[in-house]
Image (cartoon, rainbow, N blue to C red):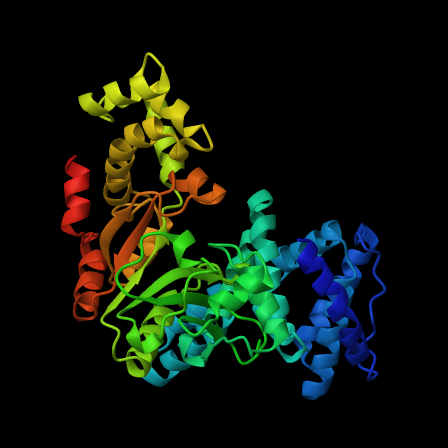
Length: 467
């Protein structure tokens, strides 16, 4: 939220200059909390924007005036502003009803086609026209992306704002079609402003320093990002790749700044170890699958020596799921041999209590008894979680699993203590997983998963699940 407020301040001056550059718009002098007596003033300004008088220049000035007024509001004022959009600028149902009647009453095909076009136009809420007008302003598209992120949070507390958020999402879906996006490789020579944003937006394995970032951009590493032409300095989503020999099983080793560099032409495997969505306001607008396919194609062309494409992925929901099933008292959770080992290692009378007690120790992986007692149940239960725990219908509960399976990957290998960072231990007990992108099977796997929710797994995953 603080970052969004800073952007509001930086955009306000250029929007004010546009708004005051002509005589068609009066800049609303709004109090920051938008009191009741100014609601009508904002409503009139919105109506003026919809009337489209005076051509494109005048329309841009009116939009800038409206936007500049919005930028000066505090959170309460912005909510009240958006409530006007939600309550007063939706679909006119009487007009829609008349359009439906006209369409149904039409006696020939030409008239029916005309009324169908009219109906489609009248079904669109007036606020969508208002929102699109920000596209013509400096940083207007980025403003709308960030506005949707704020709206998503607001709508959780006030459901009436959900309609505005949904309309804005529809606009962004049309603007952020994958055909408009540009794939760029990010290097140490990329603009500093872009590198700073990579550090800021990295969501999987946080970048600790400029030295850490430089290591991730070394000759045996690749970083690719999608950009939109109206947001040329803002990565939308990016993927970090390590060029290695064999399938990596430990992220700390993969990110070790002291590890020797490998000649990319000697590597046989590309490991996708971090995929970060950089824009919260584009949530639910999927282009991650296109990113992976484009990067695989790019790497295959540049480095034909690469034979394997796989991920080293977190299992972010495992511990939360495990805590839940432990609390529910599932009697089939542990096997007899595991029960005895957990009791002995924890000193607890109950095996499930022992499991929970050991996991609560932050350094349990450094204690031999705890390490040995936890390995079998955690590996087996993680395989069960990944393949059996569901969110909606056949969709896996784990969001990373759903992402890669829907892209045609196979669950390949669970890795014991693949991430012993504080975050990795808290979310997944240190476990990581490799998803394998076998090029000849990607489409077949995608179709099987999309059609019936079939999860393609390796023999290791199947064996672990059986125990």
